[in-house]
Amino acid sequence: MKFSRTTIAALLFVVPCFSYAQSGMGLAVTADIGYNSHGFKIDAADAGVGYDESGHATAPAVGVSYSFTDNWSVQLQYADAGNADVLTMSEESLSYTVSSDTNQINLFAAYSTERSVGGWGFGGRVGVSKWDTTFDWTASDGTQSETQELGNDSGTALIAGISTFYAINDNFDVVLSADWTKNTAAIEMTEADMTYARYAVGVSYHF
Image 1: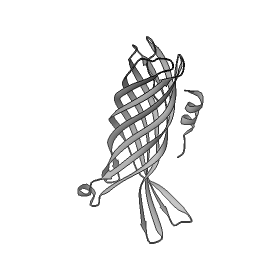
Image 2: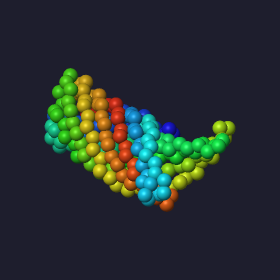
Image 3: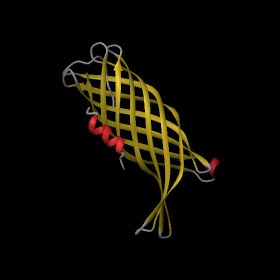
Image 4: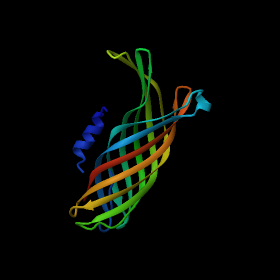
């Protein structure tokens, strides 16, 4: 996948996609890298031909959170869901690929167990995702290829996730997380039901 300059800069400068409450109120910054599965489904009744395919992409994220108590926090996250090939077809000497390029701005309310240095904790979160998806169509004959945009759509959807974290010291956590969301996006003259399952490993720094 291709990373935008904004994403690269954020990953470089926001050291340490999930943050959890330390004792009392507190600010944290987060970063992770993950695997995102893009589900792509078009209903045959709507389009004349149906598809139910999937692809995957590398998926980085950065965020900031504020903890109001030992257990509750609010989190704002930018997640690059990546560019995934979700449909591949072939005809004679040509192959055709449809790809989904998605990014998300996510706002969560999160609950977690209290942080304990040298110990494990668990959490969950639910929120709203502002998504933006571009669909591209690539035709290739094996020696050269041509890509054109099929459509671009955006909207909001519910998102939910779970995680486990290990508090290394007073400031740093290592975090394993999973998030799921789904939405419907316009593509040419029809709509595609998109599902995303993102699995990531990252770090969180508590100030």
